[in-house]
Amino acid sequence: MLLSKKQPSAAATQWIEKVKYHKNRDSYFKFLGNPHLRYTAFLLVFLSLWFLLQVFLFPPTKPTQTKFSITTPKPSAGKCNGNVAVYVYNLPEEFNLGLLDDCSHLNIYTNMCPHVANHGLGQPLDNMDLQSSDSNPWFATHQFIAEMIFHARVDNHPCRTWDPSKANLFYVPFYGGLHVSSNFREPNHAIRDALAVKLVDYLQAQPTWRKNNGKDHFLALGRTSWDFMRTDSGPDFGASCLLNLPCVKNMSVLTVERNPWKGSNQHGIPYPSYFHPSTSDQMMTWQNMMRQSNRPYLFSFIGAPRKGVGKAAIRDEMIKQCMESTQCKILKCDHGNPKCYNPSEILKVMRESRFCLQAPGDSFTRRSTFDAILSGCIPVFFSRHTAYTQYSWFLPEEASKYSVYMDEQSEESKRIEEVLMKIPKEEVDTMRATVIDMIPRLTYAHPNASHSDVGFEDAVDVALQALAQHVRDKI
Image (tube, one colour):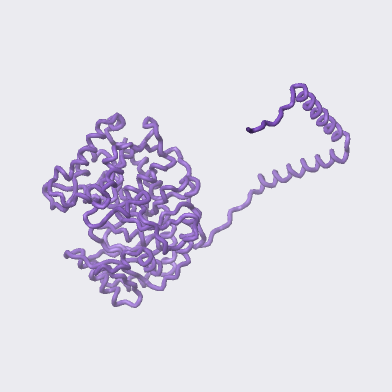
C-alpha cells in the first residue's frame, strides 16, 4: 500500500505563507538601505543597457565564402510557406498499397519485392560513405519507383492538409507505373486499362474533383510518359491509355520523362538515385566530399550498346572514343556486368570523372544523369530531350552553367575528348560547383525524416511549390 505524504493543515499553511512574506519584505528593505547593493545593481543595469546598444548599432557581419565552401541549403523543409496546401486522397488500396501484395509480379523483368521495401527506397546499402551517420542514407533504389517515394514524402510533408476546403493541390497517389509494368504482356487492352478507367470513375464522383474539374489534381508516376500513352494507330509495346483519358488530361502529371510534343500537362521530376538523407548535415557532408573529390579522368561513360539505328550509332561512337582515350573511364554494362548493378561501383566511376557522357537510353532520359549530378560530375548531353525539355523546374535556366551539349549528329560528337579539353579549367570548376549545389533539389529525402532535421528543399519540395504556382496560373 502506497503512503501519501501528510499535508499541512489550513492554519499551518497560512502561517507558512505569512513567514515567507515577512522574510521577503525584510530582505527587500535591507536591500534599499544598503548603499553597496544599490551601487552594484545600478552598475549591472548600466552594463546591460550598454551591451544591448552595441548589438543593435553594430550587428555582426556575414563571413564571405570561398568557391568550394559548404553552402547551407535553404531551410524550408521543416516549414510550409503558405503557398502550398496539398490534400492526399485516401484511395482504395487497389490503386496503390494493395498492388504491393503481389510485389513479385509488379514487373515482368524483375522481382520488385526488395525494391518496394522502405517506402520504395529499397534495401539499405552498407558499402557506401557516411556510414557513421545516425541513419544510413544509402539505398539500392530502383529507377522506376519515384511514385512510391513521392507518396511517402507527401504523406509526411509539412504542407499536407487533411481539410480539402483548405487545399490548393489534390494529390492522387496512384501507383500507375507499378501497375502498368505488371501488365506489359497483357494482350487484352480492356484488361490492361481497367484500373486506370476505374480510377477516373472514382475521381469524377468526388466533390473535390467537380469544383475545378480536376485542374488542381495531380498524379506522380515513376515510369516514362510513353508507358501511359498507347494509341490505336501506334505500336503496342505494353503501354496503357492512362494519360490519353480526357479526365487525366485536365490533371497535372509528374513523370520521370514527359512527352516533349504532346505533354503540355506533363512535368518532369528526377529519377531517384541512391542517396536519401535524413538531415541537412548528411547532405552538406556529401556535397563537401564531392567538392574535394579527386577526378583523374576527363570523362567517363557507363552503359551498354543499344540495338536500333539511332540509339546504336551514338552509343557505339561513345564506347569507341572512350576505349581509345587514356583520359576516359568506361564501365561497359553488356553481358550482365555485375559492377553495373553495384551503386558503389557506379558512383566511384563518376566521382573520379570531370564529365559524364549521357547518351539516350531506351528513351530520351536516363537515371544516370542524376547519378552523375549526385557525384559532382558535369553531364554531357547529346539530345535536348535528355534533360533540357524535361526538368525545367529543377535545372538552371542556362544549360551551359551546369552541362555540355553536343548534338549527336554534329561533328563535335565525333571528337568528344578534343571538345572537352578546350573548356578552361576555371570554367570547369565553376560548372562543377553549380552541379554540386544542385544536388539537394534533385534528391529525394528520406520519407521518415523529421521536418526540422531535413533542412533543405528536396525534389518533392521543389515539385510541390512549382506545381502550386502552375495550378494558380491555370485556374
